[in-house]
Each structure stands twice: as structure tokens, then as C-alpha cells.
Length: 466
Image (cartoon, rainbow, N blue to C red):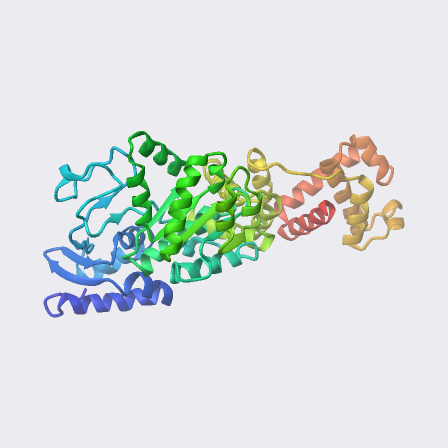
């Protein structure tokens, strides 16, 4: 252990940074550790100054497992961390936008009559309402979302100063619109800590509007939103039919846009397809960039599955990853739920994660869509895979390749068709139902004991399913 008597704590911290740099990427080190400054080491308390509260939650969540033993090694096993976040004066923290919010951190709370206007306060610190898990580091990029991610990063680097204002992100539910929108907000807070960022759902905005209207505080409500530097509004399609709220949002939008403040809007539809929304709002939504989030392709789904499983502390076999990517077709949210369910069930059942187990467990979460598959199609596919011609397949030859091809075909016919066993046997070599049962048992035994054969059968099944 390095002695803090022989070495001032600042020098020890530099040693600590060198060790951290070895265990993180350059981007991670520059973003999360380089800005940290040691400001004191008394007793067993090491005090670190960080740019903002986002650093504290991110470091504690993602880096503390390797940071703690490093701190203990260099500063002592009893060392505890304390973070210091700069607080400019005078300031007040707004934790939410509810009408009954209290302001305990204000110097004169009795003078604050509502949560939207704070007379005499030069600077307001607003809780951005962002989820730290929704950042660019955890966002999996693919062809389906590359444009959105690139535009979002450009906006985060230079909010309000790019042609992408507003940035309008649209796509079906569960494709990651909220994730990328909040990731922009998180990135802005890291790069521009002085900017006021706020994420709000349209339903929450509507509720706040109604509350302010009831209390006669609409001017204060509008004034509050006009203070925001980066406004993220989720599910804007929920404004449909709400004329008064649309009018208020129109005024807020105009003020922010003319002030070069950034707007990020998400929707399940592109601007031109929004119903019961004023045309003047739709026109403004089209001023910037409209970018679509598409369902992930198979390559992206496999990346997502690997990433989500890794975050849950599990490494899935490649054949399971491929099976899940082929059968989960809806959205990223469904993928996350399926992975969590699979890992939990495998743990509770104390079983290895295999394709058969995955298929069984996911029945409750994934709707498998199957085409009508004929015995003829199965036989043709099997023959092509094993390089056995149809005459050999239908003959009485019992060479190893031909016999295996027949057994595989019988097994797959039982699995993919509704044919009775006698009909399957009759269609494949004029065999009886006992032969079909024996073939199915043989194939099941091979699947459990022969990994190479299991991979071959999975390849045949993919071809059969088209």
C-alpha cells in the first residue's frame, strides 16, 4: 500500500488515475475521471470534487466494483469516498414540476409562491428528470438507428446551434426513442453542465398545464418552460385534440427556437401523419430533422442481446443468441424482457441455457410465427443439406448418411407438421409409426450429446422456416 504520509494525497490520486486509465477506454477516462479533483484526505475520508451530480450516480453504478479495491490499496482499507458538487450561489433546486413542490434549499422559501417563477433568483438548477441508464454508452448502434444516434450526438455537442432543431425522432413503440432522447440530455449535462435540461412526457406536460390553468398560473408555467436550454418532449402525439395545450406549447416552442435553445421531440408517427394537431405546430416540427427509428436487423439484435445479457452478468451461447434474434421480432423492449426471463428461469431451474430451454421459456413472451410447412418441403431441405438425392432417400438403402437423413426428416415432420406418425412413416420410406418414434428418440439423443449435430439441425430448421 502507498503511504499517504510519504506521498501527499494529490500524488496518490495521480497514481490512482494511472491505474484507472489502464482499466478503462480513453473516452471513458476523459469523460468520467479526468475532471475529478481531490480536495482533501482527512482520517479515512477522501473528498473528490466532481462537475455535477450525474458523475456521482454514474461512477457509483458503473465503476465502483474496480474503483473501491484500488482506493483501498492506495489510500487504506478503511477509506471512504465523499463527493463534492459545486453549487453556484444563489441557487434553488427544482426536483419536480408538481404544484405542491417545496423549496427547502431556497434561502427564503416563504417568498416562493409557486414552482414556476422564482423572483430574485438569478440562476435556477432544475432536475433534468433523466434516467442515468439511458446514455450513449448503453445505446446499441445499428443500421436501424445510426442516423438518429449521429444526429443526437451532434445536437448534444452543440445544442441549439445545429440545423437539427427541432430533432424529431419517430418510430414504433419499444425501438429506443426515449433512450436516445434521454441520452442526448445526459450527454448535454456532461458537456455543458451549466445548461438547463429537462425531459418531460407529453402527458405530464398536459397535467402541469391543466394544474396551472386551474390555479391561474399559466404565465408562470410558460415562463418556466421558456427558461429551459434543452427541452426533451416524449410522445408528442399525445397532444392530439388538446387545442389549448397545443397553443401553449406553440408559444413555448417559438420562444425556445428563436432563442437558439434545443428542442428534441419523440413521436410514434412522422410529423405529416400526426392527427388532430395544429398545422402550424406540424410545420414547426418539420423545421429541423425528422429521423426514424426502425426495428433492429438481426445483426443489431444479436448485439443488443449480448449487451443486455452482459449487463445482467451472463454470457449467452451463440446458438441461443442467434435463436433469440431470429424469433423475437417486435422491439428492443421485448428483447430485454425475454433475456431477463430466460436468465432468471435458467437460474431457478438450475439448468444450462440451451436452445431447447430458450424455446420453452420464451413461449410465454414470444409469439412464434410459423408458416405451413409440408413434409415434402422438409424432405427436400434435408436431402439438399446431406447431399442425398431423392431416389436414394426413397430407396431401401441404409447407408449412414441416408439413414440419418430419413431420421432427421421424420423428426422434423413430427415437429413442424400435424401429420400422424403413421402418415409420416408412409411418406418417408413407407415405414410404420414405430420406426418414426425410434427415429425421433435417436435424434433427441444426438441433440443432447453431439454439439456439432445440434448446430447442423438448427441450420436445417432455419432453411425450412425460410
